Every structure is written in C-alpha cells, then in structure tokens.
Length: 313
Image (tube, rainbow, N blue to C red; front, side, top):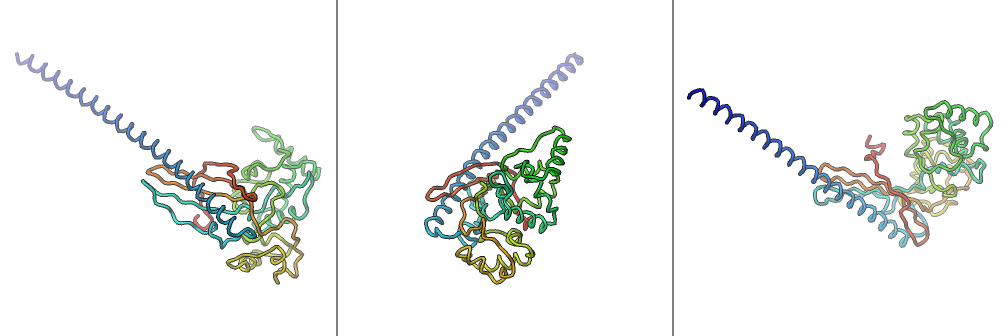
C-alpha cells in the first residue's frame, strides 16, 4: 500500500511539473507574441511619423519659396535646427539640409569632358581635407574614362579587375555619393572625410555660396585656406549674399581669381531627414527633394542608420 502511495505521489509530481512547464512555455510564447506585435505596431507608427516629417519639410520649403524667391541662405526658417516633436510613445526630429551647398561631384564632367573650374575646385577641396588631390582623376576615370589620361585610366582598370568580384568603371554620372567607395584610392576613412562636403546631383546644378561650408568656399580659388573659408562664411551674415556678384565683390576675394561659373545664391535640391524614436524602434528616413519653380517633389527616399553630425561625433 505504501509503495502504491509513493508511485501515485511521484505520478502527481510529474503531472504538476509537466503542467508547470507547459504553462511557462505558453506564457513565454504569449510574451513573445505581445512583444512582436508591439514592435510591428511601433515600426508602422515610426514609418508614418517619418513620412509626416517629410511632409513638414516640404511645407517649410514651399513656404520659403512663396516668401523669398530670390535667395536661399542659412538664416531662413527651413535651415534652423528644429525642436524634437513629442508624439505618442516617443518623438520625431526633422532636419533640412541644402544639397546645393555641397560640392557636386557630377559637375566635374560636362558633355563627356573635364569641366576645368569644377575639377580644380575638387582638387582644392581634397587638399583642404588632407586627401590626395589626384583622387579627382580617379573620379574622372570612373565617370568618363575617355576623358582621363591613359596612364590613370589603365591603372584604375587594372585595379578594378584585380578585385573580387571584379568590375569596370561606370562611365556615367554618380547616382549616389556612396559610389565613391568603389573608386580606386577611396578607402572608408577618405569617404567619411568627404561625405559631409559632397553630393551627387545633375551636373548643371550650381553651388549655392550662401549655404556652402567653409571647406567648399575655400576650394573656390587657389590660395584660399580654411580660415578664409570661415571668413567668407561669416561675411554672409544672417541674410546671405543677394547675388553671386555680391559674393565675388568680397574684399577677401579681390586678390584671388574666383570664377562665377557654377555659382548661385538659390537652391533647388534639399535633403530632409526625419528621425522617429517610438518605443524601442528607431527609424531614420532621408528624402531628397527637388524644388523647381512652383513645384516641389520627392526624388528619392532611403532608410538609413541615424546620422551624427561632426559636432555630435
């Protein structure tokens, strides 16, 4: 009898242990399901919020177009650091940057040939960033191989064929700045140094001297240093230069030969970044916007890791 009671007790304990295991598994699975559902909900909320941030950027740029059609400068509302907007479950941050204030890499080639002013500016920009100025020829050999010297063209062709997988020069304008990583001589350190100062836009897009940074301004003429670029940046004041001629008339530029070719005080291309932090989800949307006359359209969208400016790194 005692033996039967012992077997019954063990059986009961096994049943209880099994029931506890099953219950624990069910609770764990339910918690995972709840968390998965919450993550999906937060992801969808974050996507809607960053799209809303994009629409806010469009509204600000459109309002600027209607209020001041002659110039674009860093003193305008769209160029200011906007506060984070609190939303249900998190916050949204929106920032607008003038892409026309960066050096346009595609401007180096015009109708299949090297554009002299743009090429010289790129070489000077590379030197100011303490990079090899001959990297400008690598860009030429990538976009228009026939326009590069034979020695450089053959050198880069050998470099690309030796890689795994091998590839050839694109023989076309850059579609995105990230293509620089494919160029011979551009490693990650060089790419990160160039990234805040360059863009890839249609070749005819002029440089806005009202929004260009000191490095890009200093690249406009031989003999200008970063200190001169900062002085030109300060000379813009809060309202920017009213015209390219007003910029070229700066006393600092009197002893330097600065060509007005490819310069402007008005912008057509902008980058709007919308950052949404909802729950544990963090979404970063980069939208390229084109403002042409009375229209403003989204040219591209890209989800990317959160970007840190040089001041925040």
